Length: 334
Image 1 (tube, rainbow, N blue to C red):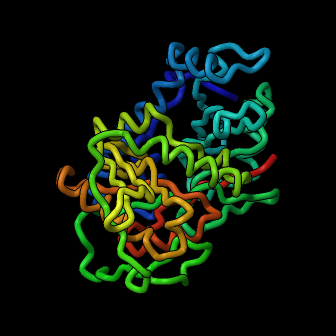
Image 2: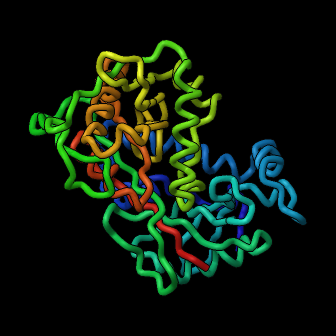
């Protein structure tokens, strides 16, 4: 049964400890300030169990026949002898044809995923959800009897350089074992962007990539003009160029932002044009972003982001740049 926020006793310590376990994170230590970030995140998630204005805005952007604004609010599910769940409806990439339930938090370890999925599917049945998305420690697959799909991997790391990470070796091919940056035919030149003149070239290149990989279009939507403007004004953008030319080859962007347990800077974009892929240049671009962010960050800030679960090359690049998997987000299909 669902319940209002006022009806549910919230043990924040228990929620925080279980969230930390799900992200391979020491809630009292690294990443720095994890508990502060989690408390703020949980407070926002709980507030949305009663925030009708937020729910009405959500309904406007993702209207579903028969649903009213209150249906879009986050919900507590409490039952005797079962974990208390906090969850909300979502739409994958804004696609009304793919509604799913986001399990935000729960208060008991060793959760029975099959029972939890049944409860959540029943609670949000009016949306006909196609899946429930859950979080587990990186590398741990949930014990669910139905179809399970890895959606995203959350990676994060301190902004200070790692003493054991002085190589540029990696590939942005479809595997981690491609050419190293030191073996590429020419170095990549990077510079912090001071305007958005590159966006037209980015959009052209991104559309070409989408046409070649249609299965990833929903998972990896193009960064919008508004988002680029946000990163320019509030964060930092690094562009990549062919040496000695104005030939734009890619861009990376980050801006201040928190997740459940990590705070500091969130990666908004990390993209290389087709002509720059397969040359081992991805770590060069990512390290240039790390350096640019580090000059703007506060002590203890992390750089974190999500990587599509199918993108092994990007996961390899992140590791080589000092950002490591913390948490997996899985779709448990209905």
